[in-house]
Length: 244
Image (cartoon, rainbow, N blue to C red; front, side, top):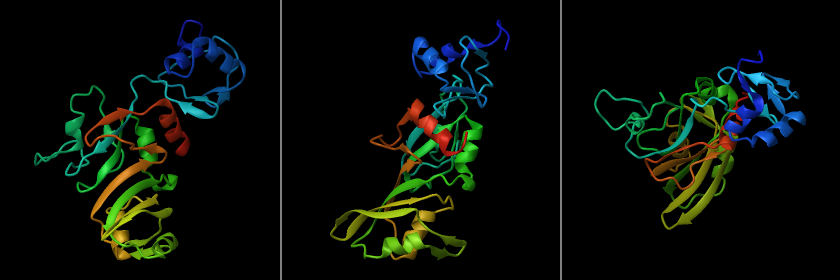
């Protein structure tokens, strides 16, 4: 861009929370910053924050101030839609007053709670939902106990369902109490009711289900109905996961 157009790269990095302007200049000088796929070492380079794609140490940085990604703990009984014609509680009710036009990344059943990502980054959302990117989702399920040995092996090997085979990335017993157990299931499938169908198929119908992670973004101790803006590391991790 010309000397008069755009914003200096070190200022963009500082505004994005990467480092101070002085430290950002050092990052540029060390060749650790890429703009649109090319290493930039010259100081004072101007870019258009609306269109430029910036990576630092190979991880993309979200430099547009109007782009946001939010982690929500979707409560039980809330639909994963932005509005509902029948007036039932939905995700849109929680973000109605935000200035951004957000949409949900994938869905959680009304009877499943936990982590749901909301964003106005269309390309990120598309890739996170596309099966070719194999984005893992982690669930914590309460099932009847005890859980027999070999269940995890069967699930990892693959189970044939009516709409085709599916296998989990990992399965582990988290806790066991008289008559019930907590199990963690990690998979990258996005088919409807997939966790419930899988566990029921191997003899352990789900009593309650919570999604605790999408990729490396964790639900943590968020209260049901609460929302938080993802930090720079989390957003960068999502971009890296889907090749942006």
